[in-house]
Every structure is written in C-alpha cells, then in structure tokens.
Image (cartoon, rainbow, N blue to C red; front, side, top):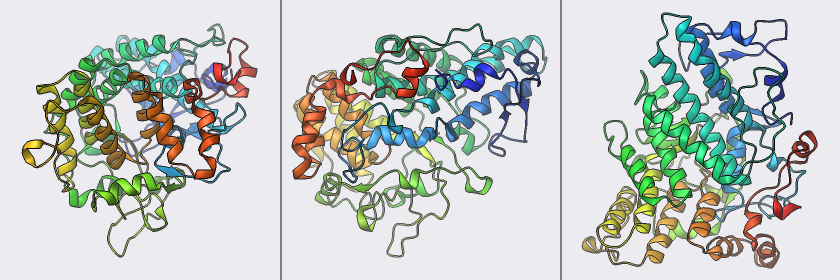
Length: 490
C-alpha cells in the first residue's frame, strides 16, 4: 500500500528542519532526508520541531502525492460528477464511466496529509518534557490543528469512497502494520467526530495575522467541519449547533458586500473566509485550479439568469465562454482581467456555506420557529446579492409552515448559485439523496444536465447508489491484499 500512508514515511525515518520567520513566509518547513539523517525521536525535541512538523501538514495540502494534487482532486471529486459543469464526453468522471485505472481514483494526497498529521499527533506530546519553551497547552494547540487536518482528509475520503482504511498510527517504524483492510463508513465518521471534538477543546480562535486565521485551522474551521459531518450523518441538531458556533462569531466572520462578491476569490482571505488553502505564485506555490473546471452548465446559468443575479452571474461565477471565473478572474467589469499566476486559493469553508448548512439542518428539525429561522439564513445569503427575500413577511412565499421538500429544493438552488465550482455540489446531491431517501434527487439532476443523447447512458451508470462512490485504484489493490474493491466495481 505504498500510497496509503505515503511510503516515504514508512521507509525514511528522518526529517530535517528548514524553519523560516513566520507561517506564511516559507513553504518548506518540513523536508525528508536520507536514512542516515536524524531519526524522528531525535527530531521531535523542541518547539521549532513541532512548528516545522505542523507546517509540513499544511504543505501537504498545497502539494500532492501519487501524481495528483490535494486541491485539484478535491475539486474534481466534489464538482465534476454533478450538474453545474460541462466536460467533453472523453472525461470519464463527468460521464460516470469509472474504473480502477483512472487517476480520479487516486487517494494518495489525502493519506499524505493523514500520515503527516499522525506524526504530529504521536510525537509532539513528548516535546513539553524536553523543551521548557513549549508547554502542554502549546502541544495541545498544535495537535488540535493536526487532528482537524486528519479529520478533513478522512471526510473527503469517506464521502468519495465510503469505506477506506483507517490509519491512526504514525509511520514511525517498520513494525507498524499498514496493510490493513477498509473500515466501515461509520467507523471513519466516528473517528472524524472524535478528532474534531478533541480539536474544538484546544484549537485557537484566531492567530496573529489574517492570512494565518484564514489559512490555519481555527475553532470556526473545526465547527464548520463538524456542521458538515453532522449534516452528512443526518444529526441535524448537532449540525445546527456547530454551525451556530461559527455564526455567533461576527467579530471575525462577516459577509462581503454583494458588490464586492468576486473579491472573495480574487483577493483571497476575505472577511467571510473560514478556512482556505493558501497559494502564492511569488514563492512558487501554485496549483492547477484554473484548469480543473470545464465550462458552466446551463443548469447553473439558468438559475442565475432566471433570478437576474448580476452579482454572482457573468464575470463573477463564470465568464464569456462559460468558463469558471472564480479561479481566474480579478475583476468583474467590462474590462475583465484574469489572473496571470496559477495561485488561486482553494476555499474549503466560508460563511454562506455554514449559513446554508444550518438552514438545511433546521428544515429537518420540524415546522414552526425552526423553519422560520431557516428562511432567515436563506435570506441572509440571498439578500446580500440584492435578490428578493423568501420570507413571506418580506414579499416572499416561505414561512414556518412551508413544506420541507420545497424548502430543500430552494436550499439546494441557493447552494448551487452561491457555492458553484467550489467542490460542494456532488456531495450535496449525495447527502440529500441518501439522508432523505430520494435517489432521484441526485439521478434526475445529473441526467438532465447532460446532453440529450447521453442521458440514458448516464442514468444507467448512476441509478445504483453504490455507483456514487469511486472504485479503489488498481495500484492500491495490488499493493495491499487486504483491500477489497468497492461493491459496484467488483
């Protein structure tokens, strides 16, 4: 299983420190050296060592493994199979024509993060006993960051493959058994919840700079991920409660004015950003996000134009030719200017996402006041871009007695208009189709978004809910004989 825990962690028992002045100033804090360099036990001895190892975890988010990058794979998994983008018929993910030989099935970047996080979680607790400048509280804060990143990585994996190997030990010696079978989805999600509960107890609310606060794990990032995990598991009260913890912090998190909506992406680390993976072309931190999304599907264009949504429409979400503008655009006017460097940040969570997650949770919790509150959060996202409110008391048609089915349709439409091309849509469709026992919610939307001539073929490939999860890559099956292919692909 050479890519599962990143084989170099298993076979190369050494690290060296390249420590720069600050978090965002240097990309390579943790480097790996040949076997005759210092061992892990020798390395994890000081505060600087803990910092270096933790930055190594963030570095893994910026980079990749197994020939693919973390952010581009996350965007592919969350967007290409759904209904808001177009690709050529040669794109197997878009055409739902999947097999174990395709690069879309590579999970190595996520286990790369997990492997580095496991090192921090196992070795950093010993440092307070060796360095008087590094307290137990300092140790807990760094471990909390690592647990957040491990939880985030596993959440991508469990939503994409359903069952994957659950590796919690650091690859500190050859005696550790890494050739393990898959764990159940519930086991993985239980571990994610446990990691996030631990992280929530110790992680900082903010850091010294805005880039750090938006680019490192914080309490709001933990709570946003908790809201997402609980929503995925249909734990609606817990989801609403976790979301509220984020929404209550209006000192750090406020919506960007609608007229400045594109600056969320063009200028990076906006006031509504909760956690985004940082890139800087000036120090050779680049990515391929500009080329991942194909063209914008008419489903999304019809949503935006049907609402006369100028603030999220042309030269905001998409440009002429229907290409995604979120990762390309720097301006949204008639002299539209595109980004020259391949360094857009990848936003994992921002405030409207959490607002709409809370609205969804509240709809499932019953009629009356909870649904009224759900409408409030819907309208907060909607009126920011000058669209008519949904609240019946403000000229709309929703109140506490509106049907749950209607409200879910509207929430999913609002999520599409607000979060398109951000790697959310496929997971939204799977979540609703699964939790509400409505497979047609996913199947119908995906089928109708494809060309007429392809619709019957696409439907045949996704009618079975087991097909909503990817096959395990052939390279992983060959490396680990404990793995069994996912059921739909056997």
